[in-house]
Image 1 (cartoon, helix red, strand yellow):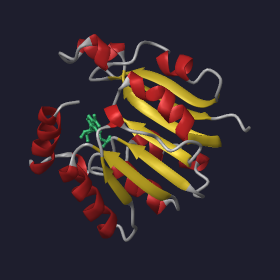
Image 2 (spheres, protein in one colour):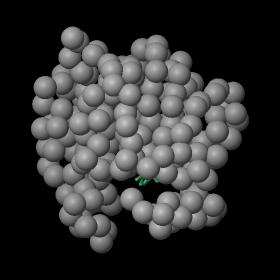
Image 3 (cartoon, rainbow, N blue to C red):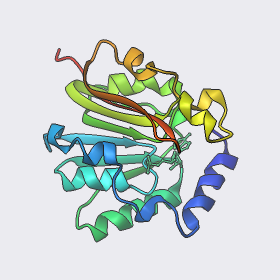
Length: 188
Ligand SMILES: C[S@@+](CC[C@H](N)C(=O)[O-])C[C@H]1O[C@@H](n2cnc3c(N)ncnc32)[C@H](O)[C@@H]1O
């Protein structure tokens, strides 16, 4: 990821109508029953923090990581508005060193960098949960995204095949194609 991309996202988050006003992603909100609310959570490419703040409201000690300091500034403001606190880290995930066996919950929404899969798998504690949701191949019908920016069919199932898949779906809504997963890392 280049400085140009960082600037692109900063500009986006400075514009009115960005993600900061939105509620947490449905895939997270609809599966709240799986959240224990105990321990540390990592929100990867957290943006303006809608999911990070949701996790903090559900009892997690949250670290939100993103390349955009403007997005993370909004995330902190959002946390304050919701009377919770989150930690934020401005970092390029392309060159990020994940803490190993550190997180009880990992969230990754609307972001795909296949190079991160090993790091995410290592960062999760045994018994921890990962929520992953982003666009899949069906989405190419609706956008000019490049094929490598979207998940292949069943790709998340393959990446986390040794985890216990708790919930999974691929939905083509007619406006977007999205794959969503919740999986638990096996206990040591
Ligand atoms: C579509 S937004 C998703 C934000 C958030 N997950 C959500 O669903 O509201 C993608 C996010 O990825 C971040 N991002 C893109 N490339 C990145 C990189 N190399 N390292 C860290 N964050 C990056 C952007 O700044 C942006 O906040």
